[in-house]
Image (cartoon, rainbow, N blue to C red; front, side):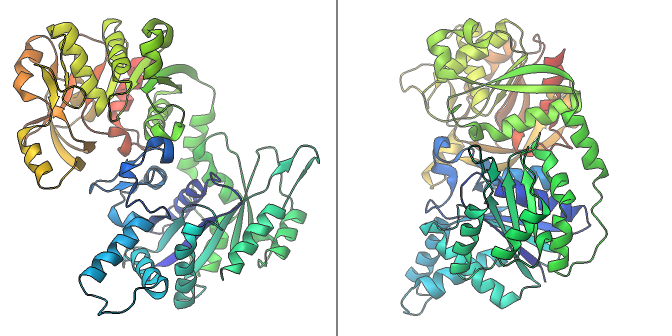
Length: 532
């Protein structure tokens, strides 16, 4: 039977519950355990797929096509695992499932209630991750303790603890220890009150992880105080989690605090200490001084850094392995339209145009793609970034001034990006997008083929529109090479401009499969071109 770790948070959002959960998972994996992860989000949206990036940051997509919370990306990057549909549930999914069952008569005419029907459904979803191969399931509950919408999840895990026993399920609570400059001291009361709110709901945390500033030390006296007033077994159950120089340093910090040791003790798990030798080498490589390069990421949600978190992390991963420090500069495509490319894009070592939807800011992205192509600056287009590159090439090289996507304009003779016929039939049947992993065959003697080192690859997608094959010959005659296709549906997946130093654009999202110790090959090649 799998063991369960429930991660909750209090006092404030953005305390790093996801990073804490991912870091603990890394430690347990390096102890030899098989770990699965799950994120429970209290919002009533069925999934984050229809939510604005301003609201919830990036939408992460798994191989099976599930649109998930961005924390699933942290889990995959830290743990080097592949998540699936059972890794992320929202209140919306829970309620949708219950209503569907009620409509089908599966409750045999009973009155549907918060307890037991909603809580039972949540417990079923949590246990859906469990199997004979998994030793530990880490479950993060989104939001903060005290949020009205999260009550169902907290009640469900309270019941689950009663059913499984304290040696099979533990509660890890993340709380803030703020430093008040005026008083020149750290205050523990917010964390105490957060734990009291949990205990009021019937949950007693086993471990308290305290988020602090980098220059703060939570000494043993303070840990004893917190243990006493939070009803913990001892000061060793209070773990300090300080601001780190880089995200990937957090597992080492938590190991030094003894978190994984306490977890194994509580759950009666026997193993040797986590072997973090390779991880330490990675962190050392990350934080050591090195040559800096600046890469511009051209988007329209730049006010929210999390909107492009997988892209920025993938760029940094490639930097670690190219021995360069990649400074990511988020640049508004709307500002490019206003101020021009010279003012906004000069002094960049490379340009990335990531995915997105809608017309706002697209002309600025097209200007950026043109600037990169004309000035021979390394360019990497991702999803919409490929469509932008195709439109720019059609307008300024082939000479079709009205070239566009049918997503952007309904009056054009040259829809170089469009919904293909087979895709239209899928849309008519209720499908909305090409989601999840699709195979791609690479063209020999291309940059992409060199990067991957093999002909057959699989990458994740999230889009509706495709390269219009009607115009493929025109592009190839003018110097744009099709470097990858989905053979089954004859869909263009990768385009390149060979005469440029590096000009590669892909219809998929390679950033979703990049890891700090295993960077994505396309990002590696891109950063290698940028540093040179």
